[in-house]
Length: 604
Image (cartoon, rainbow, N blue to C red; front, side, top):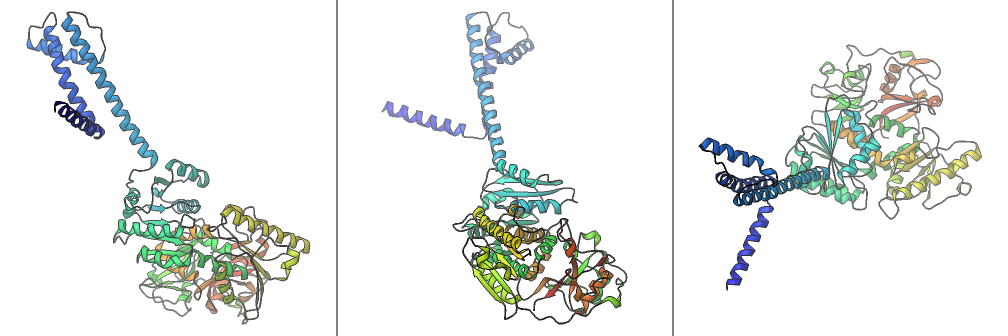
């Protein structure tokens, strides 16, 4: 019985000791300090009383005790009576135990804190920042564009949460993005699908949240789960803009429901398919989209302009010297891109324009003057027949075929070559008006690198065919990695559609200006308005020098909102390859046979 009682006592003491050590660092330090003082002070008093000579006064005794306590941190060295030596050794042992334990506790606490910071598990305290959830190749263009957008702000923060090591994320961002200027990038490690972990990046105080797809076969499901977790954290916080994207249309409805009324979910496959189809019929269109989606140049803005209330949309087209008006945003948030010129602007309408920033959106007192004599009335153009070749196959191919049917005449022909590699002389590629080259599905059994390699290999064959025949061929290529665009064997300024980068730019634009979401939705949806590159001869005479205002006025007569032009002579030089978006109204230009005018017009 006695043995069991002792064992039970030892178990309880061990349990108490384990609980004691499991307490917080501050509690351990306080308890150890009190325990040490409980031993040191009485022992110091006893040492003073047994010492020789003993101070006569109480103050002297207290001073001796204080001196002994202060000297406790040294070990040994005391001489005197045996009782004095024993008490000195006892104090030294207590001191050694206390100091070593205290140092260990403090070191452990500091190591835990450093490890917590290194692992990115602490909570940030920011307001109106941008949160990026998830990790994929889209991270780098998103952060790069956010840095550009925040270049004029004194302080901006981007908080990134992903299931990766914090230090590795920071190193990759530094390597691929470079200097971030006034924007601070804060990385946190954890799963974005866990509501408790989401709190680390404080999404409820953020201005916008961007949800990225991991890019694997579970990517869309991860996006939906992340949106559901985000909904539990945000609640009814309508001030936070949520932007996400899914690859497969079958997950789009679920993602929209998970994002809630204020969320925006982009359909990557549908947008990519439409842009590929449009680029196959209009060379240079991908360059225009790149100009409009990057923050480095001009982009979409919406402004409230009371001075234009009561005027017509046609007058507004020529009311900005350094901006291009493209539509109206109604008070209920509905966009009216490229409305008829006779449309009257009401008090609640916002002007949609393409401009560098808010400082260049300055309305003139009177519409900009133009020359009536140089305006050309375009002859009606029928949708012509075309021969097109689609090389490669992936899940977007059926969508592309459906979109192509909207832009070509009934006598057009589309040939499919789903396999590869291909021999150009067997396919007679030069007999086609345009060629679309697709990669295999990166989310399937083929990796992103292999998918892009198949595209690059096909482009090599096509370039060999061009060189042998001595003529060029209009080719539109789809790539998964934007870095491969720089090494692709195609002429400068060729049309590439890199779906990951395209969606990254689009998501960033919407996160910075939520009002533009409805505008982009119309531009990338069949049946609405689209960006069109048409012959310059449909607007102004070829040869004479004209002002850009003349081109805008000419487009107004046929209900087109002109936003720029592309000169064929400059298509192979410079970073823009001849594309000029949002020129000043008084800019002078001479158009040739191969030059085109960029305008927003309604789909036929």
